[in-house]
Amino acid sequence: MSPVLLLTVMVSSGCHSITGAYRSIPASRIDPHLFGSIKEAQVPILLSALGQDRPSAYRVGPGDTLAIFVYGVLPPSVDDTPVLSQYQTLNQRYYPPGGSIVNPSTGLPMTVETDGALEMPLIGRMPVAGLTIQEISDKIKDLYRSSSVIAAGRERVSVSLITQRIQRVVVLRQDTPNPSVALTPPGIVDQIHRGSGEVIDLPAYENDVLHALAATGGLPGTDGVREVWVMRNNVMNGNSNIAPKEIDKLVERYERGDVSGPSIVRIPLYAYPGEPLPFGPNDVILHAGDVVYVPRRYDYFYTGGLIGGSKIPLPRDEDLDIIEAISMAVGSVGGPLGQNGDSLRSGNPGWMIKPSRAVVLRKMPNGSQISIRVDLARAMEDPKERILIQPDDLVMLHFKPSEATTNAVLNFLSFGFTAPVLF
Image (cartoon, rainbow, N blue to C red; front, top):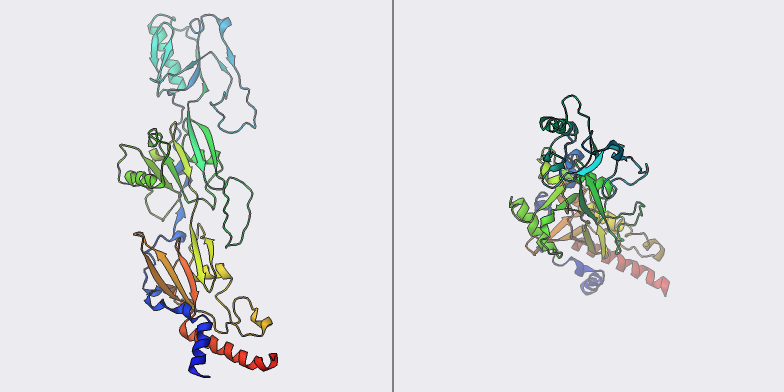
């Protein structure tokens, strides 16, 4: 066979796809810890860290509604004493709006004001913030007895909790709220996605991230990131338009410790063993107007070259190396008879020699990109060649020059031998 004919066959077989590969960086020279983090080395955090400690006795605060009965004083006549009972059904949704009456109560309903005090007849304002129900009852007895309103030994005081104070927060979730699960092939990316949002009332000592997630669907699904954001009420500052760049600035500002202005708390749900949590007990406590945000995951890698173009989601909880990425994209890295064995039906040898070169184009934080060359044959034995795929990587499969030449020759010889039969 003449050199000109061989060159023509090589060009027609796709030899142009291997040009420029030698200008890329060999995968064995890449530090595996240089890009991103190793997901499989992380473990879930204790979910109790997302909640708060509950005191042994309930401490009253502004917004609590109490039922108070003081014989002969509140109310002045026993006939005027109301009895408040529980009327809610057992299947009522957890955290109903405005709280709920949980036990029968006797007395007049009184709400603790914003300064933490109650306006009591004959004795004026009485601070009660931070006191237990029993402590409030004892304090009422002492004040009325010391004011000579009630004779010693004739105190009849009843104090009970009607409704707890609540913190109304908003939970916005971009992971799929639908409980049904639909399995799709790896190469299919959903283009239609609907999140969810709820306004919930969290009672005292349950106003935290743990209860907010439990009341709105649980932990983020596989289409959500492994973290939760808490946007404090002062983030908005009257501006409802917050661009992603502005959110990143708020995150950076909080991580620097500058919490004097708008703040946002990022709470990861996974961490390395022994690593201290980047948030504290006060960060998970929610206040009125706070927003709990579960972002959607946008981690994809792209394929090209001999694999064909596609956009494939990365696993959320597992690391994906170059061999696994190619297997996920095409089912194999070539095989002795090509990718699917169609060459058996056509009588053409196809890819007798499988492609063993992959090139990964990776974006850098500064906007540039690097090209990483992987020897797939060596990657079967050398872990250094099995680089981990990062979001937005472009994975391309190519022939080495020797592989392209061998396949070109075999296809030409096959065409030469079968041509007389065809004609």
